[in-house]
Structures are given as C-alpha cells and as structure tokens.
Figure 1 (cartoon, rainbow, N blue to C red):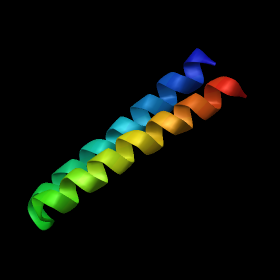
Figure 2: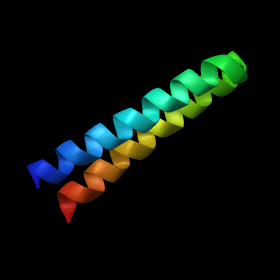
Figure 3: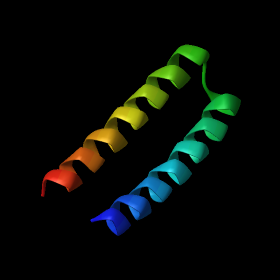
Length: 53
C-alpha cells in the first residue's frame, strides 16, 4: 500500500506543479487559488480512498 501511495503522491505532485506553473501565466489569482484548493482536496480524498480499500 505504501508503494502505491508514494507513486500517487509523486504523480499528483507533478500535476500540481504543472497546474501551478500554468495558472501563474494564464489565470487570475482567484481562479488560481480555487484550482489549487480543488487539486489538493482531490488528491487528498483520492489517497484516503486508497487507504481504506
């Protein structure tokens, strides 16, 4: 289970970093924070779901 979590964390971190760099160039601050919050919550709930299965 730990290995899966590490892989998922690496993967979500990559997506998160891409989102941030993309957002900084193209979107307004309010939209950026919204997407960041959504991404963090989404990856967190995904990890929680993995832990329970």
